[in-house]
Length: 195
Image (cartoon, rainbow, N blue to C red):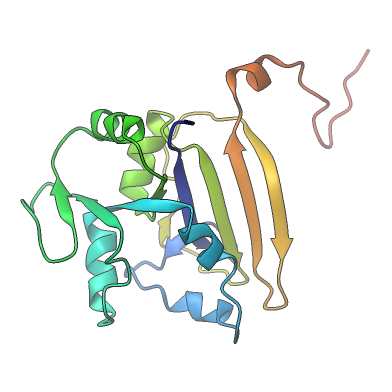
């Protein structure tokens, strides 16, 4: 059986922010389109586990909606909360050890829904296998960036890109395998080497 993967499925503004300077996500409303889920229902069938950072989980709770993932195993990384609540289990272990152990357990894939601090820690350790990023046609001009400084260099391979009538562009990349990494690189866009 193939090892489980960690899939980052998230939305950003055109300038790369997942929230405004106050942590607000009202800009996501620009993507609302009747009958369009941007592939989320198909995506969620591939996963049985969800991981969040504590601030992202708190933001979800602030929406005042019924918890949408009761049939999934949900973990929240937190330095301040302990044990469990009615929705999730709080995790205090080192991110790398926890995710590596989780990936070795049988099951479907693992959905990372942010936030930026958790993504940064996982990027440092090359723990994210696929990146499904929906770009909302909005410029925030500042806020919380999806990829904070300190992420390690990672070469990705395009799986698919899709555009929608709402203006949203969704880009699906996966981390290149060791074999792909060793392949001879092609030319650089916009650069012609001098002989």
